[in-house]
Length: 150
Figure 1 (tube, rainbow, N blue to C red):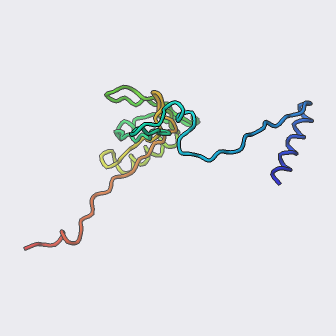
Figure 2 (figure 1 turned 135 degrees about the horizontal axis):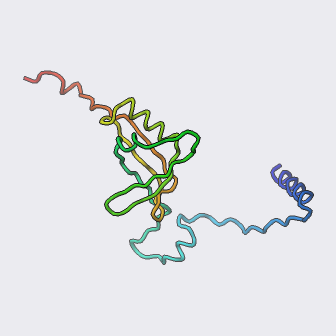
């Protein structure tokens, strides 16, 4: 059925654009080896050298700074700069996640909220960034340590 559907789409495109559309010839799929081909060619196999697809970042942020961020209505994303002692990383996060984090901070309080920015490291930027805020929970006391020990 997908083959018939694709052929139907091609016919509609031919009629719409008045020129025949040639389907590109696709080579047979190769089994995935774990490292992209271009990176494997750039880095010959050596003992102790590994290739990473991406580097995951998890950055702890100050809740009071996130609480003070502006989150205007109607704007889908907000640009942020994260400054650390080694430089600056720029990123964009969804406005909805900023408002959600601010409501969590407002409900739990600045002192008892954990805020984290996560994403993939790029060249001077954080790609696919997301903002998360969670209330901190007090440590639960175990039944063994709550009683009088005499």
